[in-house]
Image (cartoon, rainbow, N blue to C red; front, side, top):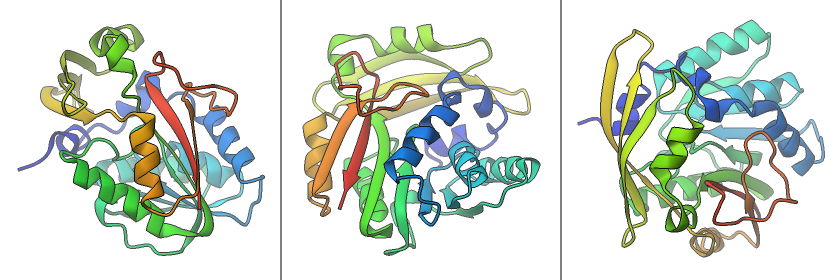
Length: 253
């Protein structure tokens, strides 16, 4: 039986590129470049790369990038976009819970819920973090965004999604946040690339900063910084608050 995230991305590549939350690529890549000192020799892994927006932008700036995703449709769109842009990215189909890389990359990125924290169990989400850590070289850096567990304690997730939504984007409704598991269950209504209207039952795991810090420390990361994730404006100058829907994590070995 397919999980909701597999069904969602089965035929949702072109529509995905129109979503409001994927429009900050250039500014986000500016931050990534600053974090690695604009060193072009850095090898980068993009986990849950989707249609390749960060991978392609970074490749266009001269970096060697490998992008992995579970969805063949997303990867096919990524390859098309890379060809149109005239850049080379090594796009591979892998499950983020079982990455085949070890000590291979200087930077691992996992942005816009690139697999983590969409999994159905906490153990599966942890396997994604573990695989990302294993893929890093000794002095590597891991940068990712994830859902901020402080947000639904103070705000309505359903209201936030409705306000952020643009015409034609997926609609997220009937949100129910469970304080015991920190999971938000909801329905997603969207139109796929073939024009079919679909509804999926979804659930995503929200994390608080102390959890993320503990999980990363258990994987050998020594320095862990967490900030508010602003669309297209990642910065170390933005402290995390309960008003941030996502958190930005920068972890170093």
